[in-house]
Image (cartoon, rainbow, N blue to C red; front, side):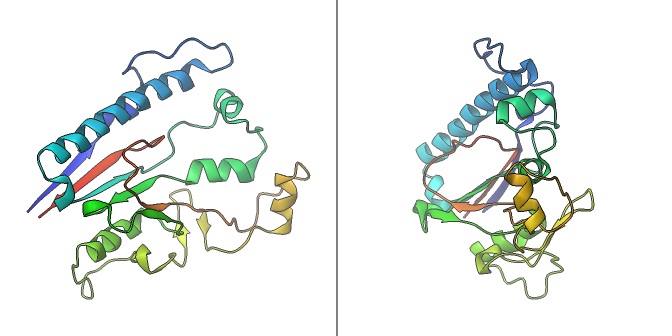
Length: 212
């Protein structure tokens, strides 16, 4: 068995990898450079997957692709690209707290989308469960996301989600009315996806490869 941990540095600043996208005056230059770098990294991950396939390892491997933080800091240019107002706190919260998680099991077993509230602290127990590792005596603070959402997710900035619905005030903010930033957001902080669809994702940071 082997374990491989790969960091895609090309998806980090200064975003100077890959072929530049056609100039578009409506797109902030930094956003355009980021998209070019992500396209480059996406292609590289695709080559990794195809290499595993050619070598016969893909269907003996648990492949995990995830991101550990949002890609770009909040800015006027990013907001314009995403169609977000500067004061749309609820929408920005989703953009800044949600990161991708894709899991491919051997043979594409159990392929499909699963929505679960969770954080990176839940990755280890989830992967251990997929690999059949007994974690009853392991000092994990997270939980197996295959059993459902975590009871809450804490973020480095002190904010947290506990899975409740949006408050009435936040619904009003989403409808373009008064802005209220307090309350509990009903959003998915981390998505658990088990898919055969391939490595085409918008943003990611790290690849795990575990094989028999």
